[in-house]
Image (cartoon, rainbow, N blue to C red; front, side, top):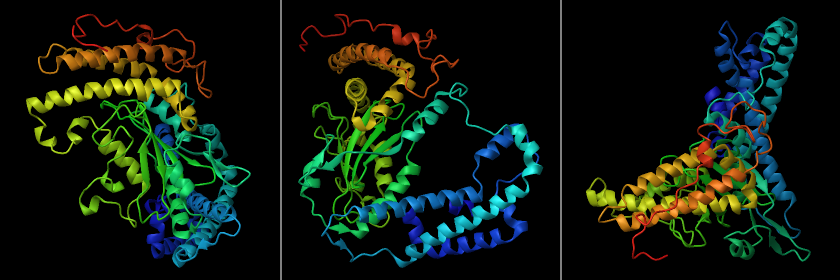
Length: 485
């Protein structure tokens, strides 16, 4: 039961309505039987303190059902908001009404959640005195304060989790009813030229996608995805992906503009990379300097039929994960068609290393330095906290990149370009260090934390000393005599 209740995709629920209606009927039966109600609560028993903490973190059947109710509530609210804010005189598309099964399932979930909540609440109240001693020992288990969290992973997830999915006012209407964009947006003209017809299927699908995104976006200190949608329009979104560890994109922040066309989901969403250095950098064979994203699931790259966008089974979350895992990879050089066959050869290895050197310096310049100096309004808080939490790791990473590139500066084949990349990387790293040192402690982080990586204005640790060590200027050996900037 728990495995089915963990499903946070309204789209998937709609495909298995009979299954979920049977499950809900079973839950109502359990809730009506006093002796079985404890099954809806967290399992109890004798266990160690550590095991009890782990048990507390596991959701009970009742809790999972409550979360499912929250998902469908969000879904119905999105649809209701869409209808309420429809322009006067604009007739919605009624050709594709919501499936009858889903229409019945949503109130069924809401009703069952209320029944289960009432039953479990009654049981808790009945056992309150009996469990009071146990609860007092646990001292009302609270989330660990950030100062106690030991690893960077724990800190990063704890701080960034609530920033993953949110709304932001990107577009509004002036007195004449014309659209006015408040942020730079690649698909501005498409939005303005789109018809006012409201597709029920599109609105319903976007509401389903929003619910899934709000709970399922990838999050870790090595790479995360953050999404912002417009406050009134779910078809207008922006995405920020942090480069995965052990790649030339590591710790960089890459921004994408997203628009869901009028015939969505019959057509895939439109996605454009905005982090291009003013259209001067091609970060990947699949990421053009004009922002085009080549990916089979977006139908912008030829691929096998099963890799193409499928209106019934494909989702925007799949698109985001594909960009994160199939494009921002460790050896992007081999993403170029035909280059894969040279993988493992001396020539292929040298070319890949040379390609990575350029991407690394571009990542520091445009996905780190420029993001700190001129963050997107939608992701300003995300960018600030990301670089503050990872500032020591980022500087160590840059130093490793510089050392790695410099060891190939004397290579006959790639020495000249590698020296160029090393010199550029040193310049960008020196500027990045200055910007990281100026970052204030973000609101919400404990300035009195004992952990030096969390403490604002504290005496730097050995690792943090990296932030204060200036990058040595490039020597004449690092740049060829005939090279000109």
